[in-house]
Image 1 (cartoon, rainbow, N blue to C red):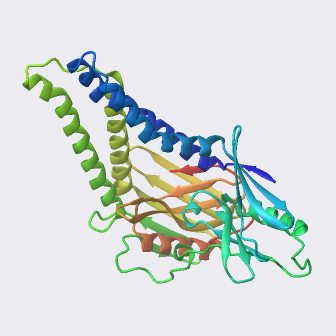
Image 2 (image 1 turned 60 degrees about the vertical axis):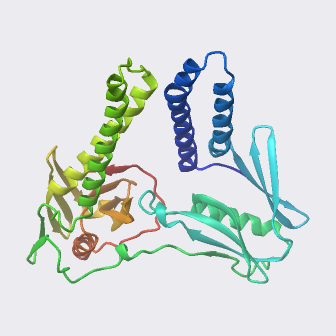
Image 3 (image 1 turned 180 degrees about the vertical axis):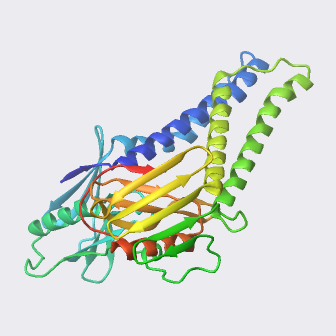
Length: 370
């Protein structure tokens, strides 16, 4: 049974490969060329280059494995083993020679914001209560199907007992918070026909978006300082500034990332919203510094409403309110606000629409951030 790497894993491999290339280009342009020019005919720059390549080699191999590698689960003489394949190269790792009593599937917490059903890890549990992970990073439904197929080929299983245990994930952000939090800026106007939730601008003193704003400012300050160091210092030493296109692109990318983070922080702090909830429909009006957005959904179109993390800044989760539809779309709103405030808003909406925080209904779609 051979499985390709999940898409998220492949993207991570591409990111590692890109950063390795940027680092190598940065090193060659900033250090290797000046070193080669100052010591013409010397072999020292080449030894330095070889050392840097050897330093980056493990990262490059890991990236190639993440992008092109495959994992196979083999059963030989009633025992499981994992076979890792990368082109012509193969590596087989045997599991402990013990009797497997069950398979357990645990969800990966960090995948909650990306998928309706989270990614998981398939774990083999042995008769002495020890365990060993088999696969990780695949959808729980895929792992559950794989575990059921493995049961048919392992003779130690009693097919009449449930030997596949799935631990579905629930987090605090999905639980109801009926009481309005003391630091909540949102207000509610409720009558027998509809509920209107007014969400003003986020207080900068207690909004997680304020941490993103500080991070973006520090990012831009450091990037600007580096640009001045590499452009003004050569001029102060009466030297012609060294021209390196890759270095310019490197700084440009960091500036773009910094301003993008700054824009997201400003948007989160200045966004206001009005949410009108009726038993048959949900209407949302969002005003931000960059655009005004209106959303209208019927009750029958909505599958689940919950609060999930969409990122992390200084060990603080950045939360948002997500509305999941039956077509698989995920509408993310009010990102960067206080977590308890979002939980209370989600509780009010779910109560009026009679919707859950999580549904195991299988659906695939795209996620839209508003």
